[in-house]
Amino acid sequence: MTVDFQVIDASHARLGGELSFATAADALLAGSRWLTAGSGAASVDCRSLQRADSAGLAVLLEWLAIATHAQRTVSFVNLPESLRQLAAISEVERWLETPPDR
Image 1: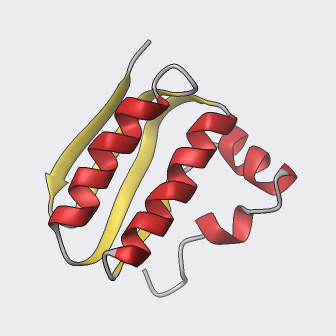
Image 2: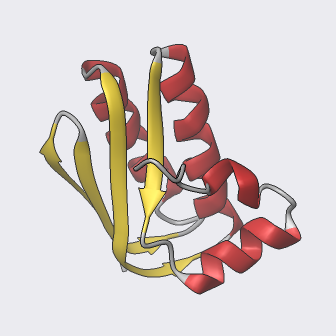
């Protein structure tokens, strides 16, 4: 399986397929390019994500760091429950929460 990172516009993207050790490098590169090319708030819709592991979680956390460095914010919507549970076990779930005003 592959990862599918689809840019909708400068502020919105979709993430689908498999976000795992096998696809993490490709996802990291695609998301990093998108985040550093734009400005302002960004949102990634994870509704089509079919599988994710700890490497996938690391990608999301790295995107948060990249967005901060680029003076942007990034939020993740429609995270699969399995990824939420992995974040909770890793005690980083609060970093992936979407602020209430979005």
